[in-house]
Image 1 (cartoon, rainbow, N blue to C red):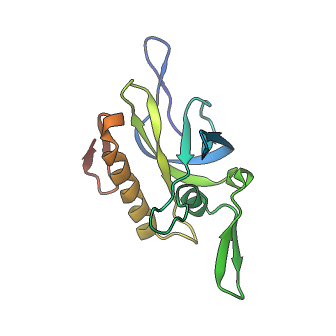
Image 2 (image 1 turned 135 degrees about the horizontal axis):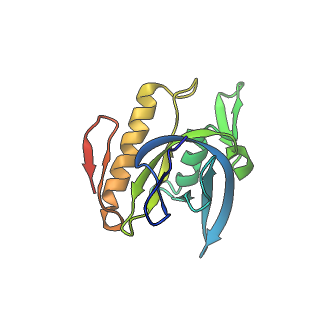
Image 3 (image 1 turned 45 degrees about the vertical axis):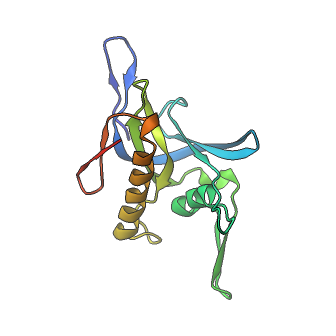
Length: 163
């Protein structure tokens, strides 16, 4: 659960950095032909959401943005034991009740925002190393988008990541 500090003007300030959250709602939408999924978290206002956009690998033409969301949340995963393959049912209803790691940061307007990618939590499906690798990738992605953010965030190794 996130700690909420009220400032003198009556607004709120949310913590920055990695936070483990429970998804209590997920809604999908479309902006100019691009699909996205908005995640909303337990005990948080709807204004603090995480929007995950579809993204496609230019070489393979496979979608990975929303696919990684479902994979890292371990939501809608259907495993065929006979063929040793898995498919993802990407209906957003599968995201509700899933626990994930989200990286919160202070945006250029001074408000708390969520990086547009999530990381898994330690589970039977993801080891500590898996979680650390994905978190590192999210941090690098976020650092690469520094024109849209300011400040620093602490990496999984305890180092400040500038952006």
